[in-house]
Length: 343
Ligand code: NAD
Image 1: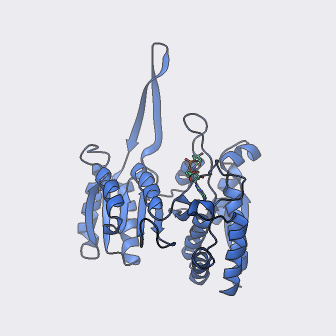
Image 2: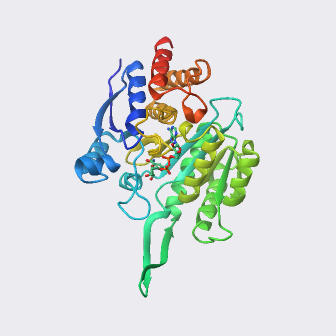
């Protein structure tokens, strides 16, 4: 076994620790490629260190520059700011790469192979929000500011275009709403079109699509798309939409890639409705682990893991409830480890 790669592990909240257990068992069967530094964040961070993003967690990722993260709970409305958003800002994780591929055939949509590249740091998620009080109503008016920069748009678009070229993709769609948010998403569209003309023309086809039409087209005929690149909020929504095309949130991984670090996670959240019941689907986090192995150029282990996931789901037919099966997370783990062991 070659030297272990130092990496930070955040088990996360809700179903996080349950699905991380599957990942750890799978990685052990693959020869334990990572030397984990276990840290906390989210609700677990508040409980253990009084902070949803403890200083020790930040220090660990600063050292390893690589992390696998379970889902982190964020209160809606009030409460603390999302630790996910803070992590993305802290490590300048500007690109969120979210592939959605059909693994289980015969669903409502077959043979899906899409990638959503979402801008991760700008737009309407920067957190510049406030209320204006009128008379005795402290929440009479709500305001939010969105910020997109040419530099931020360009580096994300460049990442998406480079990814398209490196992975042999045929087409990239820039998704926007520049007809209404003429400045905020117009700058993204304008920057993308200029970058394509400058450096990428002829290497893949480029199209532009308005977000609302894109959502409709994805449901009617998702095969017309290949890579979708878009701003933060639209990317968040579209990545859940494409997750729905391949069997739901249990099937889609994500990589947050930046200049200072890379953090891999499932697209889904902490699933509080099923937490602690041992029935969560670990596939999304396992696919995120495969992306992490590929990021570290451990292509053999990544391929072995992907093959074992496929065999567990499609040959052994070991599937959790969200996929219409009856298996528990522990049964899935046992089947997966057996598949890895037999190659
Ligand atoms: P969610 O993704 O947690 O759950 C949505 C639905 O999908 C639920 O019915 C859930 O049971 C199901 N589901 C999700 N993952 C599943 C899995 N692996 N196996 C089986 N079923 C699964 O979304 P939510 O309920 O809107 O959010 C819950 C919490 O998670 C919130 O606090 C939210 O802020 C947080 N969240 C975190 C992340 C992240 O850490 N990256 C992402 C999204 C939401």
